[in-house]
Length: 284
Image 1 (tube, rainbow, N blue to C red):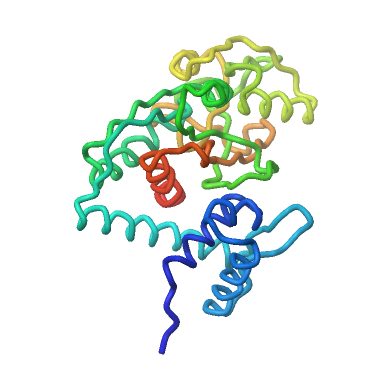
Image 2 (tube, helix red, strand yellow):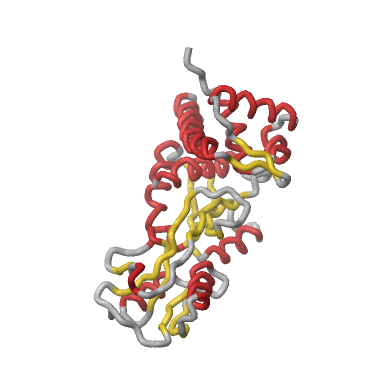
């Protein structure tokens, strides 16, 4: 008989993956750390694969654990949605959700449409801004949860990886003046910091020709052909061009997407939307 993946085991595993520590996960699921550890051993036995690596600072997912997490999130969302629909417990209420400007057009329509299919009475107020502004607003209590960008080196749950790319007007010049004119976001944003760090490492001269905290402002500058910008690959509009590696510009790093959420204070609606993000965002 084939092994059966128990919903309770998958739910506990997803919380362990999110928190990165058995102690914090045990508090979240209302179990002792020893009981939660036994659950993880049982799940590993069912899968017949190691899922977690214990470290001095918590736990990390193995390759098999990362693969299982993708399936676990989908299963949990489908399970919870089925229960809500069949029992008539479609969630109501409102939540305030922060989303970085560059992901709004790429991801928001699918995220909101999918959630509304199961919770049509829920109201979601969307706030679009750069990640540092979203973090500030969340910390002040102005957002229930936020999707934010972060360096991959940060020790937090990463839902999706995104390439940073150099972007120019589709009919823009093939050779840029020296120093390179840049159009960048606020100094505390990852695109700004990554661009300057890459150019400094390459000893390439540049000047900050345009700066804007608004994505639409940066896109307007790039469309004018007056400067080069840095965006995430998924946010590049079709009328702009990504500079190839042969352009002479230095390579840029990947960044990660994660959720900022106060799990202890989150409402059922907020937790449901966070679970929806975790299940859907990695496969968009």
